[in-house]
Amino acid sequence: MTTAESASESSQAGEFDLGTLLAERGAERYELHTRYLNHQLPRMLHTIGFDKVYERAEGAYFYDADGNDYLDMLAGFGVMGLGRHHPVIRKALHDVLDAGLADLTRFDCQPLPGLLAEKLLAHSPHLDRVFFGNSGTEAVEGALKFARFVTGRPRVLYCAHAFHGLTTGSLSVNGESGFRDGFAPLLPDTAVPLGDLDALERELRKGDVAALIVEPIQGKGVLESPPGYLLAAQELLHRHKALLIADEVQTGLGRTGDFYGYQHEDGVEPDLVCVAKALSGGYVPVGATLGKDWIFKKVYSSMDRVLVHSASFGSNAQAMAAGLAVLSVMENEQIVANVRATGERLRSRLAALTDRYEMLAEVRGRGLMIGIEFGRPRSLKLRSRWTMLQAARKGLFAQMVVVPLLQKHRILTQVSGDHMEVIKLIPPLVIGEREVDRFVEAFTAVMDDAHDGGLVWDFGKTLVKQAVANR
Image (cartoon, rainbow, N blue to C red; front, top):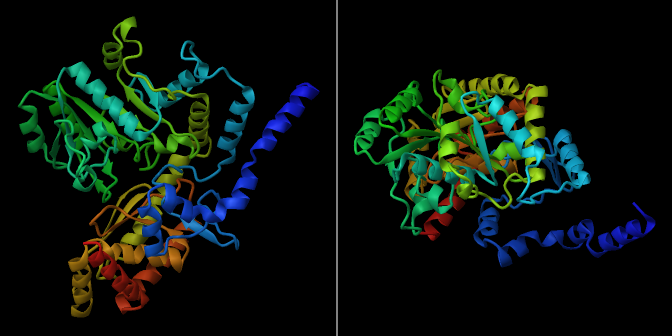
């Protein structure tokens, strides 16, 4: 670089300094959000006491200005599969920026997309090709379009309580009415109960079904598909010339203790697979639709159709570099093996508490995707309090557990879905025994308080008042 170029770059850098901007205005974060973005988000965070100010993050932890650590058992809804700011991914992004590649020319073939596709397909031996978009909902949209086109049929089946995204196509296969209400008309898709093969076959007999899209483990409620269901569904679909789409946006890339969630069931080979979230490394949004060769060749059947399905930012160099670094870390650090061991340790220790606490109904899930469900207690005193909460709004007890986990124990979790008494744990896949111990000890303390009628119930009264006010 010449002296003139260096001086020019310094001058340009002086025009915008991110550190200065954040130092000057970072404290306005909640006010800015209230004024210019979704005004209900800061309102909700203030109400439940989640309006924290995190200064930095690393691995499975956030840190506030006083240096207090907060254990992340949410992983940004699964995006932060390898934790925050993994050094290998950071280096890959610095490297790709420093390389100054001729990215997104639209009329060349850069190497990084092909290399990432090759790496992904090595974990998906029955699949042949990849389309890269920018998110999980885009990956689902691509799969829906491909399935409809190659079968010539209009309808896609999905499972009740499913979540596949919030754009119009993916919303049409979203099994939660709260997300769908007010956005009709949607596509003519049809819900079937998860695990109900008879319902699936009844719909297939109508002859207009292009595919079934299914999460191997549903994110809403952490509900597993019954043993044998995916294989039997696949056989039914193929018999009726329809496709199986596996939505692995949350369950993929090691989350359940295998690379994909569907791999827990022998013989299951989906025609299309959707991935995203963790593939980003938590930095650059990326989604991928993987499919069989014949599907891609039918969609892209001629040069006239070369751009029939595309994405302006799809396959960008930063996203591809992040994805390649993620897969490298997963292999080199044996992430899937860690998920199996750590997930079993966490799930078994929590499951052992079901005999101890009346309101702890079930602990379920695979790997590091765990659902903790609460239920109606036996004793009269607890039952009356439980009934009060349920009358105001289902899901308040789970929220009563989530809040003290953060406020008293500095652990971030989430209620698994609207009107559900389920907490979902999807921590970074790099956690270990230390984090398991911390979570179980904190959860035990909160449950002790709840069963003893402690401070948890004082917060419950606040939630009841808020729920009634919002009716």
